Amino acid sequence: MRNMMKGLFAVPVLAMMAACGQPEESASQGPAQQDAAMSEDAADDQPPQINEDVTSGVAFDFKYLFSLPESRIGSVQQEHAALCAKLGIARCRVTGLKFNKTRDGTIDAMMAFAVERSLALGFAADATALVERAEGKLATSEVNGSDVGSGIVADDSNATAIERELSKLGAELKVPGLRSEARERIIERRQELRDELATINASRDDKVQSLATTPVMFNYESGDTVLGMDRSAPLRQGLSVGETSFAAMLGFVALLFGAVAPWALLGLGIFWIFRRIRQPKAGAAPDQG
Image 1 (tube, rainbow, N blue to C red):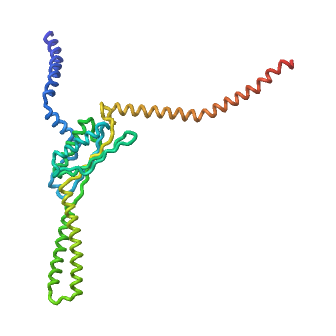
Image 2: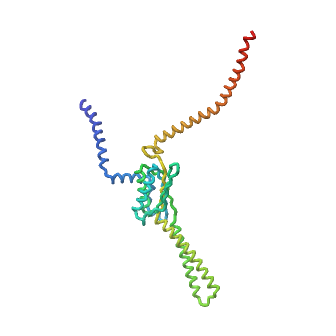
Image 3: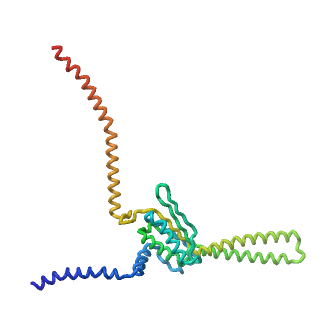
């Protein structure tokens, strides 16, 4: 029996010793391991990485909304710009910037980037990790894709057809004895085709560029995300429900007072008038006796 009791007491002691040993293991992790863990957590909020084979010819653009304390928005924008600079101007460049602080203290901020297609998703994940380190969070993310590959194929086909027609017209100009009217008509047609070909080539270049780089836009909003005061936190929800209930109670009291008060005043007025009328009659009765 004593051995059994010793065994029962030994179990919680061993559990406490194991629990005391766990913080030492987590504390032994270096900054690089902690950063990697944060990057993995941030990656959970990112769009799925899809094989390049099935997205060939599709141009994407990313839009992210970050919620973080107002005092951190400016510094996070600087960190995002520095993150882009590390990739090099050939792979990432800032294409838009906005930081607007209104009179009531709210901040409206935005940053836009043009990132190399293969690096866009990783760049967004690293940017989200920086926001989380600043006690913020990723509020929403949106990824849109458009099929520009088929448009490039169509442009190539149209350009080839125009070049063939230009070759035919060039051969017609070399025909001996060609009348001046016909020559002028051919020259005019060749110029029209050249203008059309220039437009097609410009459109094709834009489509190819959209495949090479991905637009990434970050919007920043003020949010109470510090010390567990996230909008989705139970404490925040409880306070919000309590505030709503208190406001509803005050509204009901005001409504009840507004509905009853006029009638109550009217009743008090009638009662006062009635008493004023009765008092003289009551005082005159003894004189008649």
